[in-house]
Length: 435
Image (cartoon, rainbow, N blue to C red; front, side):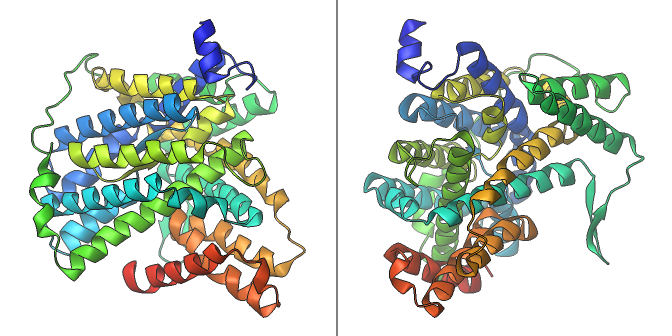
């Protein structure tokens, strides 16, 4: 134990083995849904659902443990929501590109990711982002994941007349989500240790009692074979030679690059890791992320990225890489006990996401709202993420506007040179690549 204490700096980070375990378990429970959601989305492209399940679990386990050991951060990595939908519905179904070729595109983007990481280009870009925009990213992610939690639980639904509206609050699933949110809010207000995790456990129990959550039909199930997807990307690298496929690769690269950057900045800000507007050991954290994306492409899944649900573990006290090690180990275990994960429904996890949204929204106080040239792009970042349902799109809106407002107020010299480049890149991304 003393070796683990020293290696993960538990004393310096004011944390304990028990707290790190609870944090790792909380993060896992909050993001375990990806084991089932990712196969559902990617199988629409024609990929084997069982193979995707195993690829998802292995990618999350290996990359997250690597993050913990190599970078010593409580940040989990797994195939990302949003980009998997782009893979299936836009690339494969919309463009008519075979899933094998699309997977090769993910591999190429991952290899480019590795090169950018090795030459520390990603690290330099992230460190040059102004502080006000970084804290806006953190707050925006908070609103975004709270919106996801409310939507997945059925409390916020689409509406053709008002865009969104309240769901049917009298339904059993909605009442379960409301119970989970209220009980978790009460526990948090009373400063109960591991309040988020306890809230999810209580919500699951209530859901089972009232028939909203089905008991698993079995306890142990063998992990499905990877054979249908493993290594397929390598055999189709030669297919990437048209302008359309190059555009697909660039989209995978850009979206994952900035989603990861935004997520890591937000999580580091939430946990208090930022020092002098920079994230220590950022290069190592990005290396773990690049490994996850590459491994996922080889195993057979869409791009992996730092997961915003890591904020749930951070919120209950996770401060070291030991949190990530525990989370990764649970993904390994989950491959064998997958039937038990069926009790973790969106109604169970919604409370965790909403609470974390509240915690991350506190970063809004650090934006210089009195300086409109800075406040306007920061606001677009914050509001853009939930309204576009995309972290990268929200960042794009703010990064495009920031150089413009600074130039027009005769403060161009205050803008880091990288921000001009990023503004131009995002302009191309929004108007040419993404749409």
